[in-house]
Image (cartoon, rainbow, N blue to C red; front, top):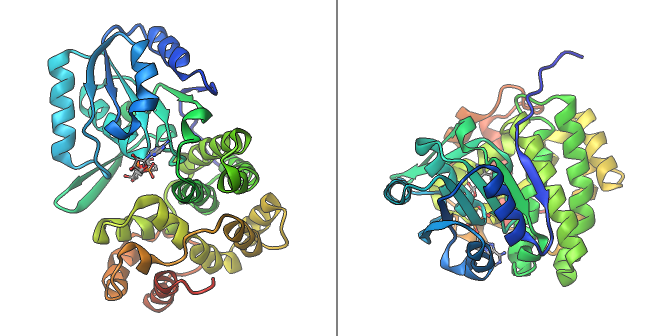
Length: 349
Ligand code: NAD
């Protein structure tokens, strides 16, 4: 056993129902006195009580998925003009992503309050979009200094979005099993993430109960930590290309593609197969995921989210160019085309 595992330095606070107090404490511990709050208008009800306890100098509401550079530039300029010394984000991955874009050029610390299961808050990965092309990078400045997880804020997520977002988190676990830098610590975390998500997500889908949301949120955090360390595997390369090319919704794209990548890789990944199956408490990894997807009524077809049929052939070359060399199953034009077609038409995996 020979590996190097880097642990990202970050405070993580689970505070159901107490995010205003917890965020104020984290901001104060950073010695910050001039807070920029990033939260879209739709997140106002979560953001207001947090804002009320902050030394606020700026409210920024312009949040756009995949962080267009011009949106990032406006947020950076606003932060400079207001002389902010900390960025507080309240929202999903798009909001956290804008905070990261500000931190990338200003070096301001971030306190992140996530309201979805996307997991961006636990990674040092940033993403920006220019002219329809998304660029990502890794930079320690964008890793939030603190995360405040308040499960109460996620009880307002509509079930359909909660399910897709939870399956996005599950994809972090599955893809971490064979990510380019995977190590046994990542695999242990990914297994624990699968266990927690499989326990929590059916409850979230059924009645949105707080305990289910808490389990799912914990699973989403562990998933993101595993993924940040292991790096993007085949699943994320596919979703990244499809999302950028056809402007597909992030969480739903992950939710649809995941079973197809799992079925594609497990025949050549016996260790991952055993770990994933055990984490689901199922006989096989594929059966475990299928049971969860059926329990939560997971989305099934990329065609439903606006991907054109002709996009299958268009997406193959850029995905092939990005596939990590260590992917368990060798990826060819033929088997990748079959995988994408199955995800496009919603064939059983
Ligand atoms: P999102 O942030 O765009 O949110 C999706 C929708 O849900 C939005 O309309 C938002 O207003 C709404 N919403 C969010 N929280 C809500 C709540 N609690 N109640 C009701 N509505 C709510 O989507 P996302 O899936 O969270 O994030 C996707 C983005 O995050 C993508 O750009 C993706 O690339 C990025 N991401 C980055 C990383 C990383 O490590 N850098 C990891 C995961 C995702």
